[in-house]
Image 1: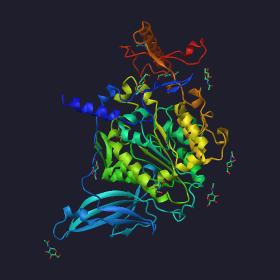
Image 2: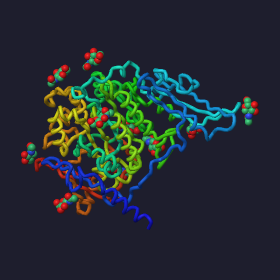
Image 3: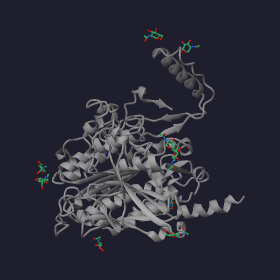
Image 4: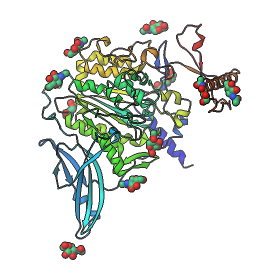
Length: 568
Ligand SMILES: *[C@@H]1O[C@H](CO)[C@@H](O)[C@H](O)[C@H]1NC(C)=O
Ligand SMILES: *[C@@H]1O[C@H](CO)[C@@H](O)[C@H](O)[C@H]1NC(C)=O
Ligand SMILES: *[C@@H]1O[C@H](CO)[C@@H](O)[C@H](O)[C@H]1NC(C)=O
Ligand SMILES: *[C@@H]1O[C@H](CO)[C@@H](O)[C@H](O)[C@H]1NC(C)=O
Ligand SMILES: *[C@@H]1O[C@H](CO)[C@@H](O)[C@H](O)[C@H]1NC(C)=O
Ligand SMILES: *[C@@H]1O[C@H](CO)[C@@H](O)[C@H](O)[C@H]1NC(C)=O
Ligand SMILES: *[C@@H]1O[C@H](CO)[C@@H](O)[C@H](O)[C@H]1NC(C)=O
Ligand SMILES: *[C@@H]1O[C@H](CO)[C@@H](O)[C@H](O)[C@H]1NC(C)=O
Ligand SMILES: *[C@@H]1O[C@H](CO)[C@@H](O)[C@H](O)[C@H]1NC(C)=O
Ligand SMILES: *[C@@H]1O[C@H](CO)[C@@H](O)[C@H](O)[C@H]1NC(C)=O
């Protein structure tokens, strides 16, 4: 009873969204060979299951220790805000703070999960952090005689200037700058539909001038790793086997990650991710043996996770120690941007958040406002004056309520992609911008993002064939800054049949042939058990009932090709 008015109000609020890419669409892509259906975000079945969660507050007290970068001295300073410790003060108490220098433990046999405390030292007021300290844990205690009680601990990352980068200032004319900085922000499991649904403020932010979207993006693999491999190496996960076995330590280091190309072009590189238990390159994989980029947050987060624990909100690990895990990640991005936005060397950064979005489709609602606040801070730092900014994801929700409803099949397969081009870039490359606009409703894949990133390093190219190397798995994939073919098939975009959303579906659950067909499918599955010699281990499947059956219609195939008929 009480819920009704609340739901109504939210429905109104949700529908009052942005104006640029609005409903009344029937297809995201509509060509002779691809009919990718538009999915409406605000349907009642989803809205009635959506919780409007609040942003968790991990701790109620304020930070005693804050890090500030001194741009004149080019050094980090740790300031102790004694007044924040007042609540703990009694007569004769003193505040005592210490820091621990944290490093990646290169001697560990699980280097990417490791960290080491090199030393622990007393912190004096406005302490100048040595340039070799990249990560620290800090602790403050109130001391009263022999009694010492730790009242706050935290982790801090320093984007140190370890090879004199920051001393080279930005040359006069940004317009003439041939190499744009490229910053990628990723939200795990966020479909373009769910972004509109749960992150309205973020959605509205990316409707501003300079932002372009690709509504025909289709995922190429099940979970994060294959989609990010496609985006960052141009390889499918199967094809990486031609290089090495990603389960073997050292293999990931050998893959041709795009940040290596950026590094070769003298970019300053960064990569970071928040949720430690589902990290893309570490979940059931050995991670990187060598630090993959110049700035890498993982050792600090590992140290924090071991030392402070994660705490749960809404059944997810949203807090790590004193703050949101997301905030440690985005603060790292902010530091990286602030430190290098004015330097001669361009930046490449990949900042991937999964903490809010991976488990439940509606938790990102809580993140929305903070997310935009960070964008506004980046704006204030000048990020959008100079850099290309990409907001993207790997796929949509793969499980849970959203996946189960009728549109879940599509939404799972439809990641989001927004590309921001700064004013100078738009002036200098109007044709590339025109192409990107043309491509909005054409079929694209994460392999194309790989080619686009390559293109940004080869802006002297005049056609896609100039861009080398091309994607190893999908040689027909291409930069999104060149025009995509209108009649592009999933195959041409490197999207396998299982993930392709181009083909229309007709529900045939009530057709008389549904039951015999289902029985035939079960038979096939049981034959499979025999074939794989699993009959001793597994009981046979039996048909209980048909939930629904869809007929997938092949487009543009020869009429005689009946093998192409598919039922799900
Ligand atoms: C949506 O399309 C229908 C039919 O073409 C049209 O009558 C209606 O005005 C459109 N609504 C909006 C919001 O554009
Ligand atoms: C796409 O295919 C359709 C049907 O085969 C054809 O009529 C149309 O001209 C093609 N469009 C382009 C741009 O090739
Ligand atoms: C405070 O410290 C002084 C000097 O150490 C000592 O004489 C005094 O008794 C202490 N007072 C309390 C309340 O502990
Ligand atoms: C990178 O910087 C080095 C040193 O400044 C320079 O010699 C080299 O040519 C640069 N490489 C590229 C690709 O710009
Ligand atoms: C972290 O969790 C472990 C195991 O639950 C517990 O023993 C430890 O005290 C916790 N540490 C902190 C700092 O809360
Ligand atoms: C990661 O942690 C969260 C929160 O504890 C949990 O719900 C999730 O299942 C974990 N994921 C994996 C892959 O272990
Ligand atoms: C970015 O550009 C805007 C508009 O030209 C300008 O007002 C602002 O000062 C610039 N910001 C920085 C940090 O350079
Ligand atoms: C672009 O510049 C690079 C480096 O100077 C050069 O190797 C490449 O051939 C050029 N490509 C084209 C298409 O001109
Ligand atoms: C299970 O299915 C297989 C293949 O259809 C069949 O050969 C076998 O007899 C079945 N086993 C049982 C216990 O029904
Ligand atoms: C099937 O499994 C049985 C029992 O484990 C084994 O003896 C037999 O060799 C296997 N056959 C094949 C073809 O793998």
